[in-house]
Image (cartoon, rainbow, N blue to C red; front, side, top):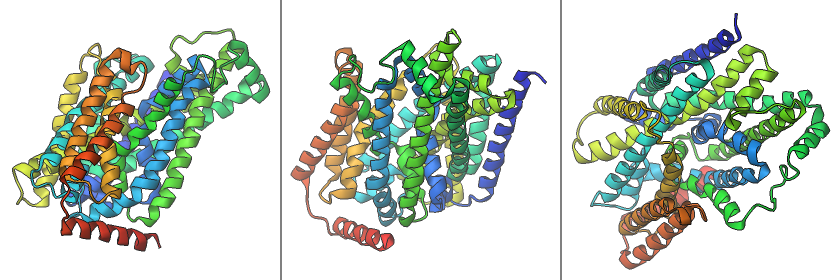
Length: 495
């Protein structure tokens, strides 16, 4: 059997496993809360790894190793910022959001939570945030499908469109039928595959490059500053921009929805430990893979044509073709886990926050589950159309979407959980100004080259939300009672 066939066999086994999990989740899905939020029944390990896998995407296995390979540890500041942001998200948002979304009319999406929490009788928060999620995640999903198509093209020589349809078909199948449970269970398995692949490459690679001492010597021979977090070329604004990526976590719907689905507040502590442990070790693995790659090519007088393929190439050099195929499956897992998470959140926004809120309030759960599945299919078809021409690059929207969601939703989520005087007008004003600021800042090169747009967007949103809320605040006994009840429940569940 050829090397290519071994690798293709590993990919096929992986795809079949994803579909099997989707069928299992389909059998356990009976109502809308099951489909959109897994019946709030996720355990800590599934919650932690599914959040991590949904978060990291192909950046963890291709983008970060490629950046470290080219520029050294100065590129690790993004990883540091993301780790800090993820930890604070688990610590500050997870337990309170789990309790508060249940207290506020058992909300199953972020827009419906904000609508209930702030008693927004205008429905503007729910509709506006639902539209924001729908629009941006449609493009976000499309960018993942582009990555899937290019993966099959570069790895196996398949036509781009064939690869696009394979990835899209498998992801849509298990997401459409199994809903949130299928997404979470597949993300859990995908997170394990990513983790094992990332720690295996640098560990085995170290033996090939002669151990720690020889590896470090070879890296320094390429560039003495490659192992320096603060080389002479680093700037304060550049480091702040990199670390500021961590601010985005508070407003990412496809990540924080996991906090709403965990079975209890008590389990968020264990989930936090598992999730952050997974993240730190995976990031170290990605960085280690890049550094081992630098040492390997220095020792063998070779040249890597595309830095972002260092993980793939090292896997093919160090391991049997079938194991190398599992390494390829890890990249596919990173891409597919993010696509599926974004599909289910987009479906939730379309059904729960737009269709259900505006047009049909009396149908039974079977109707809404069917609508949710149709929403997944429609969004997927639109995303495939957008991704059909790989030259029409939409990948730039990924960075903007992270900043846009972080700036629009991040401060509002934090204020809604910790400040009882946040008003619906404050939330709407902050959400809109944060998103606009991030958009304009990101489109002006002189500004975005100096500072990542999430920084001004986040703080403009925060300031506007606070100022407008102070100006429009009126005591509401129902809001006060819910705030107090969530605080009490939080204390009870923690003890």
